[in-house]
Image 1: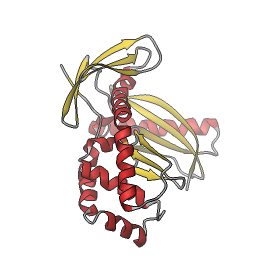
Image 2: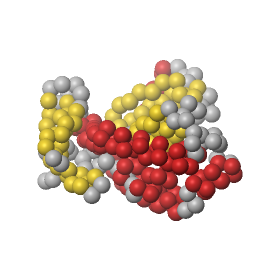
Image 3: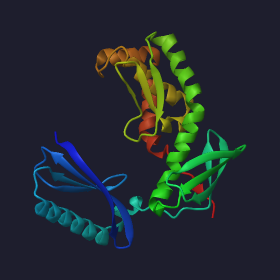
Length: 256
């Protein structure tokens, strides 16, 4: 399997669409490929290339992207960040939050509660508009994760005490889109912050899945036996997550 040795992040103008690009060098790779993924245009290159050949191959992939964008602009449309609005709303667990957006000269993005269900997002004026837009969902995820972590930690311990009785070291919420959860050999339970947007029963199902890994590290029959004993209807929740999981996002609705 190719192993990443370097990564360069940049942007590319494709017929007026400014899209993020990640140029990745990989040891063990023989060919050069370009692919449009959820968050960027990826260009993957072999490690053992001279600089001249490396630039030639990158240009080939850029030319391919431009041709593709001309023929099928919809292939890249999801990578184009909308302009930042001055205000947004976001529904979290049945409660509507209003979000005011401001810019400041600092280098970091922050989010602070103002009163009740009102939040203020402060975006760095040094960042380009696409980065500012993408920062808002991340800030919302971080804000709600911080407020909900004690509750989620208690729930993990409740389910563990009732079904598994194993030692838990730490519970974390992570703003990840690659997996719903993970469990380390040290007893660390990591859960995707997006699960806060799922029904409680679905969140419980993921917690039980990860807790079962404290007994079995793999996904063999013994593992699924532990899951089924703790939650006989786990397949229903797995199906819900497969069908509805992509919609679990901290994307606020702009107020125009």
